[in-house]
Image (cartoon, rainbow, N blue to C red; front, side, top):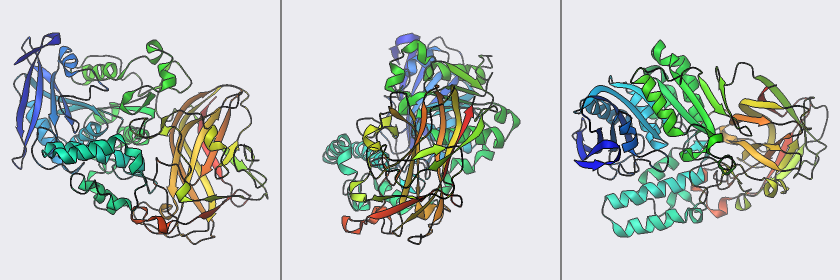
Length: 571
């Protein structure tokens, strides 16, 4: 035993044997006063010694609150045995690890879990396996499935995230195998990830083959097929009997999935108690629970409770049966542009109403200098807008909800001036608001469009424009044309044909002051967040530079094709 702060003791490398005899190792932090305590378990892919302390307090702090804290290296990572395959082993290993932890000396027999991103996924998959001892989870900044909303979105690869995450996993995998040369090469590549985003064909990236073979698997399964379905959390809500605290951030890549998990478990969880004990918290955070620059500038008092505070309140409520008030409102959110936490009965809030803004213009909405507008009145007969998209000079993503490090992937709120000055971006702007309103709910774009190519993408980004003209991104989404009808099966497009595309921008929560305007950008790429579509009709992961085609895109907005933006508004 090693003495630590907070009167806590540590036992390292405690072995848990899985059902197939693979040994997983954990560090166990015990309050040193003796007695029996609820277990707080983290199952992590990032090293049990670190215990995600880049986002949470050290495990000793949680142990000081009266919890037996167990931090486990998952299969094939760091000190644990076996072979790592992202997501696929977490149902069975999650069940076995929870039941093992519940039987540890000093445990009172009940287990809660915490962790963000991949350790959020390990919680959800453990809960889907329904271990009897699991009584509470607090998944943070994590998704509802691992095809759409993690690896892909709307059929397009989450390029920057997928590449750098695979390089990171590969680097630690090489270290786990004792291969110093490969670890060094992968670490250098990870630190310089943007240099690898445009490797073509992506499926043949040479650094992934040995220690990140799953990267090729992701690319070889570009639809929601049987590779992804066994670990699709959103298809297993009815198996959950566990209260859950869902922590999410307005600028996190996994925000839509976190909100979907909350909504799905409120209506579909296995028991009334589980359905009633779902809590959603959304803050001014990007990935890792870190506040955006603008939120940080308001200071700690304005930010209010952090992740640690929310988790301890939740655990005290659900594991120790203390009334902490955390369930007084199902939804707590700090809206963008606001400095106070709001409490809502649901998401979207019951008082929020749909508001529709139609794309309008005289045929030249290209760039912010064009004639595109957002109007509440539906269009009549008016010309379409036309732009070209070249995958070799893809429109950049500036800010946004990517993951997970701003130096490697654009994240957070950002001035959109550089993007809105491009002619391959259509810009539609509303009149100034006459009074303060709140956007609170999902934002969706219905776009009627045609392309000259066999496949392409359409990207939409919602922004708020202040009276000085500064445009700041709120949310964005993408649809790959061949996925317009289904994520399970690709459907070719006929060049020149007009199709209706639905682009989900995700949840939006923002206080919009009087005098501000809404703005919608429409483009065909957002690089490096999403992999550019080569427009050839083939799979983007197999494309070479010679496969890339320039597309002419036509966006129609008339009485027959009312392209529009829908938001939820509280007035």
